[in-house]
Image (cartoon, rainbow, N blue to C red):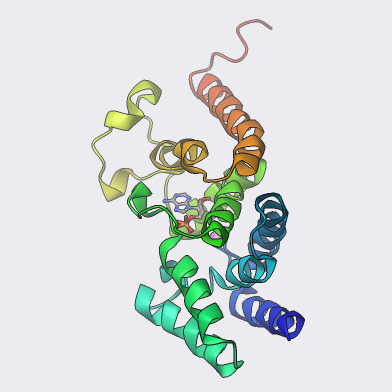
Length: 217
Ligand code: ADP
Ligand code: NI
C-alpha cells in the first residue's frame, strides 16, 4: 500500500512540476527525496512520511500556485483522493505547510520527519547545485545578476528594496544562513562542504568583478 502511494505521488509530482523552469522542477524533487531518505536512515525517522512529504513539498509551493492555501488544498485533496490514512495526511500536510525558509521566521519543525525533509530541501539550496538553482531562479524572475553599488562587506545592511534584489544578494539574505538553521547532525556535515563551496564562489566572483583576479599572473 505504502509503495503504491509513493509511486502515485511520484507520478503526481512529475506531472505537476515537469514544466517548471524556476529550479523547483522534478529533478529537485528527485534530489530532495534521495537526501530525505538518507537523512531518515541516520535519524531513525519514518521513511514513508519523509519520502511522501519530499515528493509533494513543492506541488504546494505558493510561488507555483495562486496562493499558499490553494497549493496546500491541491495536495490535501490529492492525498484524500488516494485514500491515504488521515493521520498520514495530517503529518505530511503539517510538514509541507511549515517547512519553507520564510526569512527564517517559521517556528522549528516539531517532528523528526519534518526536520529531515526541511534539511533535505535546504541541502539542495546549497553548494554547486544551490548556486545553479539561484541563477536559474533569478533569470526566471528577471532579476539582475549583481548590483554594482552594493558593497560585498555591507550586504547585511543593504537597504532592501525589491528593485535591488539580485542573484548575488540571495546568498546573503538566505543561502549563507542555511547551514546554521539545519536540524540534523548528518545534514550539518553535508552542508559544511557545500557552504564552503559557495563562499569560494563568492570570493572568486568578487575578485573578478573588481578585476583583482589577474594580479598574480
Ligand atoms: P523554500 O522552499 O525554503 O521556501 P524557495 O522555494 O524560496 O525555498 O527557494 C528555493 C530555491 O530557489 C533557493 O534555494 C534559490 O536557489 C532559489 N530562490 C528562491 N528565491 C530566490 C531569489 N529571490 N533569488 C534567487 N534565487 C532564489
Ligand atoms: Ni523544494
